[in-house]
Length: 194
Image (cartoon, rainbow, N blue to C red):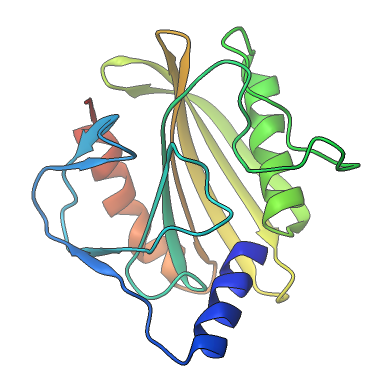
């Protein structure tokens, strides 16, 4: 959320529209060609944020304040989901290939709390899943952001070859999450390694 507010502030200050790129409903490489997905409908690829890590790609259909799809492709052991300074008091834990499901969900929660400004974060469900035909973890959650909008989210993570692959959807709980969730599940099902 802080990232969304920062991008919006930069755009307003610059007086220009964001250079979004249309993503057609066909197979496309994402997250630096780390994986391929086939969206069932058109999305918009968001411009790279100064806060983004090099393994990240962000999409939206209705604007990042309403819905956002995050891809992290091939995050290596010892790296974090977010850019952070070494001397910061609070940090998102770094990824380790031997992380357990509770450690993975805790890392994702920390990301949303520390980098996206989430408050009142709640775990709604954790279940086994499949990504790239391999065992994965599905994590459903909800939170209230710094803008006091209630959001719901779902992420699917897999550790393949010692690297983290994550697809995550979040949307305003009023309507946008429910509208995008079936598309997200289809995108996850279509995902293949780059």
